[in-house]
Image (cartoon, rainbow, N blue to C red; front, top):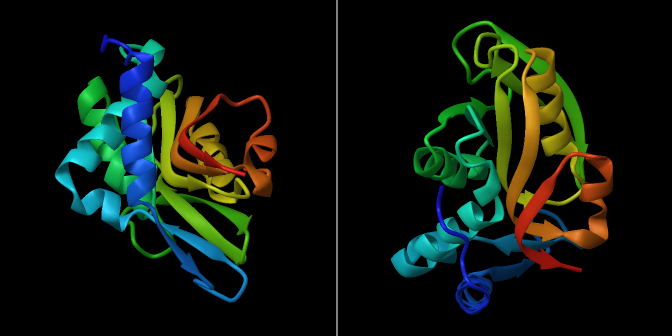
Length: 187
């Protein structure tokens, strides 16, 4: 099991990640302030720190998780790395028409519209312990849909893990009793 970060290291890494988040006003539509993570990904030291912070948030679950589910598309970026670091498998949840085999689907609402997500029907075995990973928790729509997909396949979602949580949008509330962990929060 990875050692938890000490408080000073955790705060130093968070400050470094937060400093690299780029605010983009009016994207993807007017009135939205988009939190762009690409500068975090572009800097090797900051990226490594962000991954360390992800693992720190779920250190107690390491060794007790079978699968990490990454939500398209930025959830793939951190999800696969988290899975590799904790010794779990990785499964993708994608938008319609992108998975080649039989799928299960869920519809969801997000802060600027509606969409659907799909997972391969054989991606999760009954009883598997799953962590859902995405870059951002806003309204909770995509994470809720991913949780529903895992549940339809018989999996047990033990946590949802995000780089950023936009607390003012209430996504955590939408996820109910599910354990929610975020590296950075914006209110």
